[in-house]
Image (cartoon, rainbow, N blue to C red; front, side, top):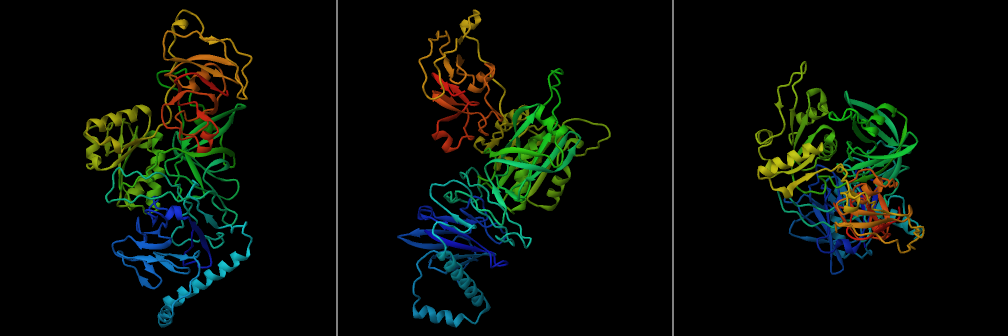
Length: 603
């Protein structure tokens, strides 16, 4: 186990403690840099994307610089990229504005030659600073040793090989203290699988160095998963039918998520609990608030009698500053953080702009090595969400290129930019090097289908294509031959069915002529129904008036998880909403689960 103290020299009395297990330091070791893919992230323009690494070899610990210029210091020595530096207790590594001090190795007696060498250099101010920090480290270590072994300091992070949580990040010029000095604390981005689809330089495999639970910082808690109650801090009218709701914790909270992810709101509407998922439009680089941007949804033009969007319109009409809302999350894999590509193309329409805005804000805030072309399609200039901010981002950042196109002609709204829907002429005009980029697309379903078809026909490498999914329309159950003959496929309830894993043999089900239908037993409700394999268990439950909570309908939020008693299913999509613990306890996601045999679930 390698123990490290992480200091920001502007606040040398405050530090963060890290414990890196030998398991995490084997093979390629723990990468250090300002990239979210690194095991230890130091967000500063003075730190390169992959700056160095800590590793173990034959029971000893080493540091190696991975920069071309060799700008890192080991004690008072400028490091050589070709050399690996053995680590001893109190050794100091300086990377940009950050100081890493080795704190967890047995203290070895220094040789006389080394002591003499240190004495000769003690006159330099840099050496005095180094010795002062070492003294502070030894003092802190002695204080820690006196404490009970069962009690850990509030700011200590234990890194275990099997835990799955998040890295910590410390913004340049900020402290890890209690915030009394006005320092800004930046929460970590969750570590995920590294995607090397497109990259300007080779990337190294990075282990997921994570922790089980973030510590509280001076009474401020980090939220990175689960249910939380938030308070509406502000409501911003972006356009005539779009509002941004800005939330803060009911107690001091820092929000931690990946840009591009979504949260699920739990709302009480007309005395009924309703869940809906919305992309987070804010960025984790501004962690004190969390924002969602919501568009009012009118009734469909082709079905004027249909009800308008229930939840979105309810938020517009009812939520006021000071109101409290419960939400869960974050969820979703639609994020550029896990991709090491340096050239990105964001394409959005309507409210699909929200996850793109989160990723763009994050990239510019953290000085990430990303070149972004942002293409957004709107009906008219007055319908462009975040227009002023987008134009300011393009004006102030040379690595952010904005392309807006309008799809409708409107009077009184002059527009001299791009017009029309994205096509084989417009896309290369806005982004000539689109084939060299990783594409992220979000918007209405018809828009995303059109963009996907367009780039496929243009020969784009589709392994670099990503799109958000807000769920798919319900698939109606094809009628079996019995239903066509007015014979019900619903079997009479079996009163012997219980929910405690004791399921009596259900009454025989007449096999349908279509051999792709299977019996589905709802144990708690006492129903057994034939279900075609093209229909999800959630859709079937809703048809049978069996209550199963749901939200995203795409496997991302986990709202529809139900416990399996006997199950033979296939998933249509990835069950991202299930934790490993959920799967081990026998839960499945009803929204993307399709029967492949007999199914018995606790619903």
